[in-house]
Length: 118
Length: 112
Image 1 (cartoon, chains in turn purple, cyan):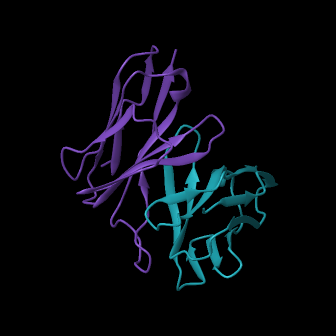
Image 2 (spheres, rainbow over the protein chains, first blue to last red):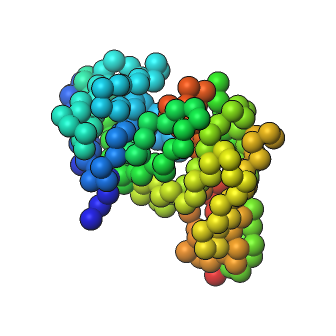
């Protein structure tokens, strides 16, 4: 069974459209994340979500919004898509949220969604 | 602000060689460090997680060490195989300890 699954794997759409990427984890983890990997392969955090707490990277435009219907799902909604949004988006999860002084479990990643905006 | 660098950016070796990948981070007040592998078109797979109280972790032919005081970690791969060809990334917690900051990765090619 796939631990962290994302759909769709590929997404091609036009500028100005609104789209969503779904993510589900069956690991029973408490925290889920969205990362963006740009054309230069740099991975950058967009959001992390732990039940009641959402941490947003301040550089992420407010056109991006995470939605979590339950602990096992964290979907990513993107409004008014722009050319610069083209990238690979990765969902990930971990057992704990990670605080200073606490042990942290490994991150588990999905296979990514390649978004192309034309 | 936590920043992570990795050298070399790319590495090509013949099969069977032992090799070392390097990771450096600017804020040494971390509580763990993770090494990942990424195959083309795939997500990241966690290889090793080193807690701050540990100096190294081993898994099969992989050995990762951590020197917090100098802000460095190394990933040692013994007897490399073509199947080891991938991009290897290290990640450490950010200054708030809530998210992980990734290095740019080392692209490894092991030639048969």
